[in-house]
Length: 251
Length: 251
DNA sequence: CGGACAGTTGAATGAATTCAACAATCGTGG
DNA sequence: CCACGATTGTTGAATTCATTCAACTGTCCG
Image (cartoon, rainbow over all chains, first blue to last red; front, side):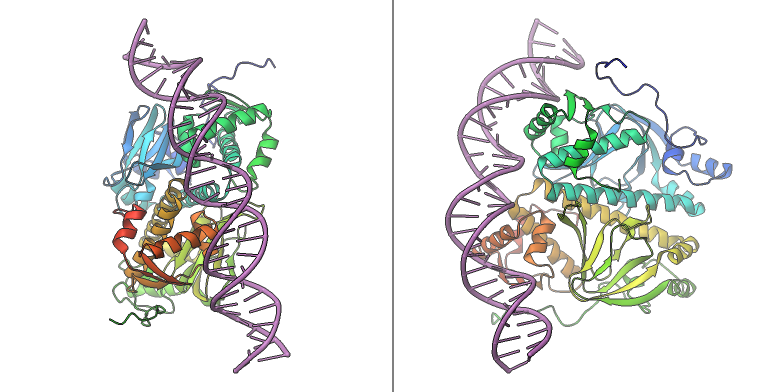
């Protein structure tokens, strides 16, 4: 194989699960894959409001706003974040195609965080009230939402561990490994990919200054762990990187 | 008023919500207060396995273990935490009476974190499979669980913000204020209470060293914000403390 | 082309940690 | 009920990892 210049994402956008009837939006496939018959599907169709496009930097919803929709990401990526009120913000989530946004607003009926597009993003807006109705009729949907939220909590725990107990190197290593796994699980390359977050965002997400991110990334490159050119990264020694991240088992 | 020695918690353990049929466990009252008729109640009763007591330091469940029960805390308090594998751990949750534990295991069917008693604690173990069955019949139960998890996610976001973006003073101030609110909402004193966590645990929870916790607490005391004697705390200037915490609105 | 933004680098600074030693308190068994 | 070992809490001094500040380069996009 010729060592090509680090490229963008693989062209084909394959889905990682079995082909399922996919109507106007990827939501069934990725979020609600439990055995639904065609009647259920039709019912589900009725809750899909419409798909929408957001450009880099545009905000999907703001904290405090009434919960109207749940957002299913079809393509692109989104960051969610919360703020202290005096300007400081913490990115709490990084979401890609197939993930559901806004579920944390369920209890209060108001969004608790803000979501904005990291790049051009296509979403399905799902009316929450109608989803509610439908979920009453199809219990597996509620169950599926329960599962999605439990995964979210799991991820949050991991981020808290990172923010509270890991040093800068471990944070970056974990970040890269976790991206790698995420891409791999979606049939993209797990060794070579583009970062959709800026250095500043990565730093914010990991609780580090932008400069620290840059320095550690450089150190990784000098140690032969990665090759990085701006947003393009290539993990050349995943094993050693994993060792630094102290990442074991459960993803 | 004679400035009495800081005392323990108020004697009467009042519940904070309307009196509801409460059978062998506080679970209905606090976790599932939606309109259930007596038939539903009887059904719910059948899922309660038994109540159990854990003493300080005892572990309720460990990460990786099969999810068998959800735990409803009747009295006492519990910490949950995750680890790096090389000894370091991060406390991710601090739970008191009326709260549900183990929900984050729903997706994987295995507990993701470890839970241990901070003091003598009384819990109801609820068989997850039977809860599942019952939830199929009473949709409001699943909905209630959804809400509980969304609250959890909301709390996690707040802790991530704290760990990532707040300095030591803000962390302690927020911790104290949040405890205060929690006690107040349960009809305990919001100005005078006992910490069930040790300095070490508090530090761990807030991403600080034990010594830092002590020093900041002393500084608070010197500034007349609090009075603290070992585990007993009295918030003498909640307003100023809130200002330091930069805590506004949504709890 | 030019302005804005993203990324990079070095030097100085600092907030919190680590280390070490000690004091107070708890709890448990003699 | 007291004593003693263990745990929990406290303090000062030295250290450090990451931040802040400032200056600069490269790159994207209108």
